[in-house]
Amino acid sequence: MNHGLMFSFRNPPGGSRSMIDVYRNELRLVQEAEALGFDTIWLTEHHFVEDGYSPSIIPLAAAIASVTERVRIGFNLLLLPLHDAVKVAEDIATLDVLSNGRIDVGLGQGYAVHEFAGFGVPMSDRLGRFREGLDVLDGLWTNESFSYSGTHYDFDDVRLTPRPVQQPRPPLWIGATSEPGVRRAGRRGANLLGLASRHLQQVYEDARSEVGLDPTGSDVLQLQWTHVAPTDDEAWEHAAPCFHHVLTVYAKWANESSDADKGGPKTVIPPVEELRDPPGPLMFRPAFGSPASVAETISATCNRTRTTHLCLGVLPGMDPTHTRRSMELYMTEVAPTLG
Image (spheres, helix red, strand yellow):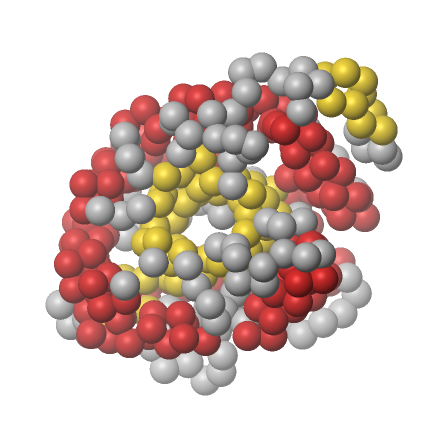
């Protein structure tokens, strides 16, 4: 099992820290995570968010590469339709050189309406830009010279320098929440940024089989919002307000996306005091509690679907002292029970 942490470099409203402090604290935690034995640091991208949700993950990855030596650095995920894929190919190749081949490239289409509006990209173009962007990245990374003609990209004889350290290219991951998206990831031979769904896992493996690939020959990541403390009560006391902020922001974007798609059920987040025993299903089932409780919750997730990589979401706004202790308890008391 690959054990990773996901940092979003956020500063929820009401906090007393500056963004300078947030970035410095997160980078210190990244260094400590490497020392504790975590395998991967995952980064996540969103834009125009009040809490500063990391909008520029390639510079962040470069900063992490400069203060670490062993830990891998992954994207969960980069919103490819919002970027120029040629520039992304150059930046990630350079990043792979800076990190000496430690980059995992996770990509997704995005769904937040306000982000596409801010970048002036029509929502109707996101799938086309995503598909063509994947072609462009793969072509530039794996060919000495590459030409492409499509709706969104059109160029001749482009040569990428420097080239990635990892050959033929850095590991490619695709995040998807629908059958077509998951099927696309499988057919392209990409690793999967998953959702612990048995059905979607089967769709993904069937798609790999259809193109002659080993259905279980890829990596699959599961995201798990996690906080470990000596007792369940203490863990929930520290985690619940931060987790409520996470859910509230995601629910707002999901509901705006639903409105843009003309319908669909609304996501409602219960009050913070009801999160531990919610009246209905949450967007994410968290793993908060003592080491034994967290191990039980994560084991259930891993047993639900094939999991090679665990991505533990670091809660924004958490006191770094509590986050640090959670990391330590996880690696010393939880990870050994998971393999």
